[in-house]
Length: 316
View 1 (cartoon, rainbow, N blue to C red):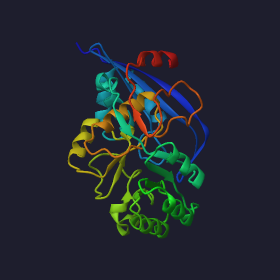
View 2 (view 1 turned 45 degrees about the horizontal axis):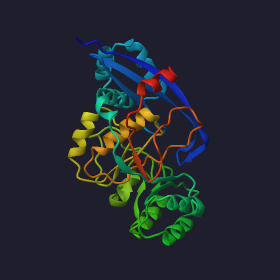
View 3 (view 1 turned 90 degrees about the vertical axis):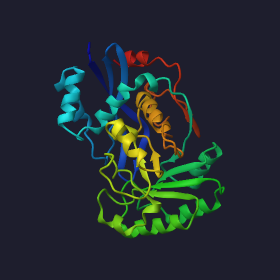
View 4 (view 1 turned 45 degrees about the vertical axis):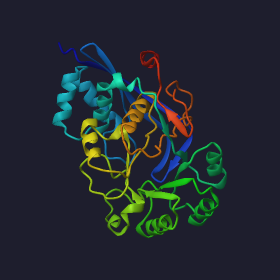
């Protein structure tokens, strides 16, 4: 008998310090945690939208969850009718469906260090912690000359990713992309222009990664790198099918999930046969709220033997 049902919680997380990107400044995020029960099997998932991505927001998610009235089959039917309009919620349900595997995941993964305010001090602190790949935020206010200087003096085995969050114009983007081609230590410039900007046609795709421009698998034609946020990609079976048709150039990144969303996202990323360092250096950015339990550092892993029901009860 199918006894599919669900519950959900809305949680707010405050950053310790304002988090600044090219897309704006964040002081907090909201998340929706979901617990499903189907044929006696419990699953967990997390709805984690992020600014500048064309997904549902938290209020829209709450509305559809209330409309389905706790009936899992009703919810799935609603989402089928609203095809591709609720990718975060579809991703969360994909996590719920595979939770028996996800909760057992404890493999190690190399992690890129996140630097939101790049300077010689902040970058070398990450290098001293053992990070071999660094991702830092850039904007029109970032000094290209300063970044050139820092990279030129960094150890040659350290790789850099520069993320503009769509904040640059075409002229600025060309300068940064030309710089990327001048250094073997730079993986790519991430999302230099806004989503759907015609200027992308004038940039060399092999040093330009799309992030905000990618949400639904199969909807985007791009030969260069793509940054995937597992919490935003919709149905995971569709994503896995899309991924099998792409040999490399796929990178995985966080949207500041709680422990539930992080565990699921790491599990999905680890399924990738061509897994470069992941962008999940997002722990310790929030005030203490009992929603982070993974360990941070240049090597990260899933949580083994963790009591997920206890986490749910404490925030219910």
